Length: 238
Image (cartoon, rainbow, N blue to C red; front, side, top):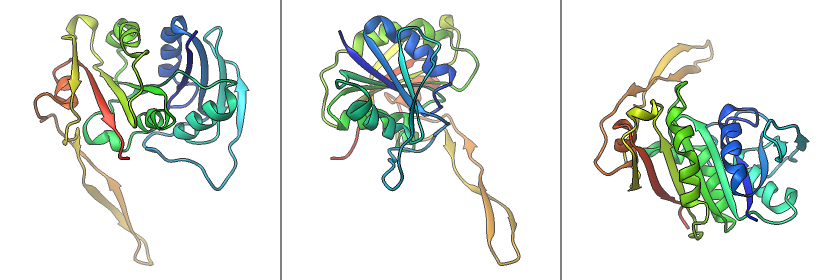
């Protein structure tokens, strides 16, 4: 039986990780090790200079052993695969993230970072993300099909499958586009707005992005803008 390790960056109580576990339970033995709190945009950060606190906890999906972790998503994959699980996983699933992880955003994503840690450890790894809207119809309709297609992928050094799903009704989804390349663009053209200045001269800034949907053809970004499910490979350096 496959051993499956699931993590995320939205926290162990998030809706996305529950839905992923519910879909994945028919594919093998499930272990969940996920952050106790939200850790979005933590990228591939790991904890080295302080201890990790890992605690077994109740999980709403039956048959799952679940643990909350004080660290980052990549920490969850490391401690989960190296210490918590009695045997190493066959596959690491990260997500389902609330918000796309496409284009240049993949470098900041802790959902992607956790999956890349799985790949670094030698496991097949898949990152799942969806549009940050209340509609999960397309994700829930396709998630088992996507798992079945990629869960037995032969691990490729430092590479993961990165899947992004539009937040539209299933009837509006135009299908699956595989082999998408990572766009060099971004949903937001970032800038910083000055909020004020303190008496000692410290200037206070807040990010203030300009929304953008211009994307290159054949990319992950273009696919989700056009209401396709995007499937692509993301590679880490090394």
